[in-house]
Length: 261
Image 1 (cartoon, helix red, strand yellow):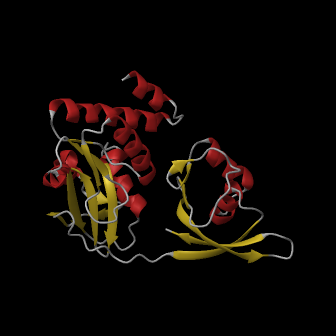
Image 2 (cartoon, rainbow, N blue to C red):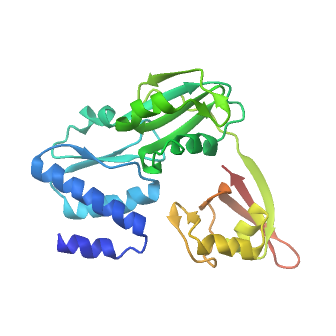
């Protein structure tokens, strides 16, 4: 265990370090007690990091990420001493469908309404918004609590709910806003300042407070260089992808195209 602790301590992200340690503990339970265990939901960056640790230390257990449907973003890690992981997938995750007048509901509205019940983000998977209904993927352990206590999403009263079979979701086509911006450089603070319409100082403060993720990883350095297809998430401002660099102005500034998610 000592070597594992040393490896975990390398990461400066305290939250990620704790997640890795907890998952290592659960992997040890799966290995020693010959039982199936699982993690909370992890984002894609966390999945990559956690997988490398588990495969390094636990060659004797089978692992699989599962988020409730194909191409889900947030997933749990299922750890099993035998290969029959498929038999356990639906034990750990449930998909709840809530119906109402949700025309103007956003992902943030739904997440905020659930977390207002005292539920931690790591217990919640993907949220999928349809016309007049919302699918929320959660850990099975909190399903009954949400059903009993989630009455409204934003200001809209929930009319009814149902449990939907995992892997049976019809994912709606998403429509994205495309923005054309001019920036002085490919520095992250310059691009975020332009896309979010804030000053360079305000942009740098976002980094200082750990509110910026690039490709799901927290980035603290404002001078981080953004590349095409990078996903930038800013707490309080949303997410966008740098689609391409489309050219230069006469003064040497850069034309960029971003896709708001």
